[in-house]
Image (cartoon, rainbow, N blue to C red; front, side, top):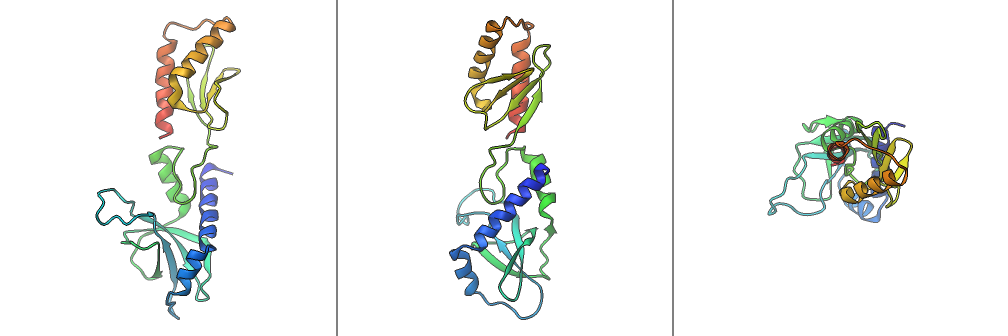
Amino acid sequence: MTKNREVKNHILSELKRITESTEFTDWLDGEYIPETGDLYVVFNNSFIFRESIKTKKSNKYLACKLLKSREVKTDDCFIVGQLRMISPYKILSGDSNSERNTIISEVRLEIEELGELLFVLVGEIFDDVIIEENISNKNFTTLRLNPSCGSETLFLDNVIEFSDCAEKDAIWTSIETYCEETSISNPDNFSKQFETSINNLKRKAI
C-alpha cells in the first residue's frame, strides 16, 4: 500500500468513527434533510471558534455524501473549499459552488508541501513513517529517521538510524563512540557531512 493510500484510509476510518459518535448522530437527527437533490455533510477543520483569533485557518474541509435516509457514506468523500464554518458540521446541497477535489490528490499535495510527517486532516499523527537521507561517506551511506526505533542510535550496516532529529548532538556522540569502538576512520569533513544530511532530514520531516 502506498503512503498516500495509507493516509487516505486512516482519514476515512476516522470519519467513520466520527459519524458513529453520539455527538454527531444527535446533531444529524436534529437537522432538516431536503427530499430532493444531492446532499453532503461537511466537517469543520478546527475545534475552536476563530472569529476573534488571529490565526490562519485552512480553507479545505472534508465532506461526505449524505443520503436521504440520513446515512453518511464515508466511502464517498472528497475535499471542498471556500466555505465559512463556525459549527462542527454543516449540510450542503450538491449544487453548491464549492470546489471539490479527491482526498488522494489533496493528501499527495499536503505531503509534498508539508513534509512526510504531517498532521492528517482528522485523527492522530502517524509515528511509523520512515524517512531517509543520503550521506556522502565511505563508511555510512544513509541517515534514517525511524520514530519507532527507540531512544538509542542504531548502526545497521551502512545505515545510521535514530528516532528524533532534535537529538542531533546525542546522535553525533553515539557515532563518534561507535567509530572509536569499531576502529572506523572517517574523513575530516564527516561532521560537516552529517550536519548537512541531518538538516536535510529535518526539512523533510517538518
